[in-house]
Amino acid sequence: GDSVTQTEGPVTLSEGTSLTVNCSYETKQYPTLFWYVQYPGEGPQLLFKVPKANEKGSNRGFEATYNKEATSFHLQKASVQESDSAVYYCALGDETGGYKVVFGSGTRLLVSP
Amino acid sequence: GPKVLQIPSHQIIDMGQMVTLNCDPVSNHLYFYWYKQILGQQMEFLVNFYNGKVMEKSKLFKDQFSVERPDGSYFTLKIQPTALEDSAVYFCASSRDRQDTQYFGPGTRLLVL
Image (tube, rainbow over all chains, first blue to last red; front, side, top):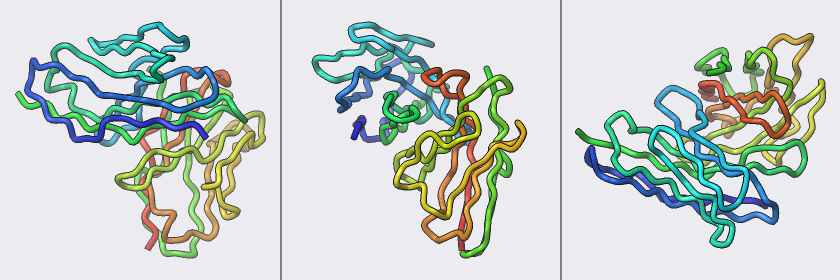
């Protein structure tokens, strides 16, 4: 079945430094790819999604490009802030059956001031 | 953004008892989902539901699990009887259309003793 693999956390950074969270996926489909963010005590919330290969998604300074050839969807941000501390999930939309989101294991980001 | 509510936020029960987890989805959404996350592990799909019927369920959706949404009220996940391995956080999600963005609730933390 479909699967998603991402950088194992925690990732600890200082404010103002750059972030890359690697994400790779396996599927026989052409899925929509997602980045979700989860804050303590909350459910995952969509950061952005990209439905087509070779397109880029972005939100709040985060961005990722859907690379179909490399089956990757790495999350990047040029300058992180303390408020970015959260768990980030890479995911894909599995269109078989009734449709579902297949999540990676999550990457905890800790940003210190 | 759209909010999904889950009741209760925490539940502790003895093994063998029945438990019902309640989800109040976004008001105009038609597709409903449950996901399970065991502590420290990946979030995994359990079931999706549309027009009063289960569309797809995963192998995690045991015979002891059932879902329903009677008359547009809460979307519920019932476990009867519960087992120790059912201890997890259960996230409800809803979407307007089949492949539309899923919005997640904050989760119900279930502990089976």
